[in-house]
Image (cartoon, rainbow, N blue to C red):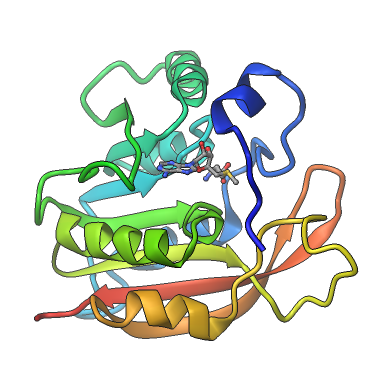
Amino acid sequence: MLHKIDWDKAYREERQLPWDTGLVAPELAAYIKEHAAGKSGNDNARIKNALEIGCGSGTNAIWMAQQNIKVLSTDLSPKAIEMAEQKKAQAGIDDERLTFKVADILAQAPADDASQDFVFDRGVFHVLESEGRETFARRAAKALKAGGRWLCIAGSKDEARQNPLAGPPQLSALEIVTAVEPYFEVIKIDRGYFVLPDGEQHLSWICVFAKREI
Ligand SMILES: C[S@@+](CC[C@H](N)C(=O)[O-])C[C@H]1O[C@@H](n2cnc3c(N)ncnc32)[C@H](O)[C@@H]1O
């Protein structure tokens, strides 16, 4: 079941949004610490450029820029991008390390073809319907260099809920790979949790995909 959300309105209302924790996603921090440091052999050893799709108010983008990664972060919502720009200024980032851009992944390519080492999305791929998920996967793959990877954090259908709308959208592993496999090899689909600002937890998928050489 799809959550119908007016994203820009949600940010303009300036209430606490359940996904906007203000904390760096632990899955992202763990991935970057392992891979950007080149600890894993040929395994995407150095991340110089990253594209984030659906960055919201920019917490994760700013953190990646602080790890000396050149970041392009996009979101559909102009208000989210405005908030992200404010946080960027507060973080004292005023160079080309970090660019925020209003962009709809369903409407346009988010970045130049083959320009990125890494794509990150937390809670964005999972808000789309099946056709949109296919578009997302195709555009993410196009933006990546050969061998580039996508870390995707999505809600999991394995969480039994009385009301599917009470919590993040939920996908099955099959729904994820159906959209992704034409463009990516599946490196990992693991189980994790979204932790909301009030401490509530929801089951998630932590997915790592490698761009397929077609
Ligand atoms: C659940 S929020 C997650 C935001 C952010 N990744 C985070 O973890 O805080 C989903 C985000 O995706 C953005 N979004 C939704 N549809 C989008 C689309 N088609 N293209 C780009 N961004 C989109 C929304 O504006 C929103 O910021």
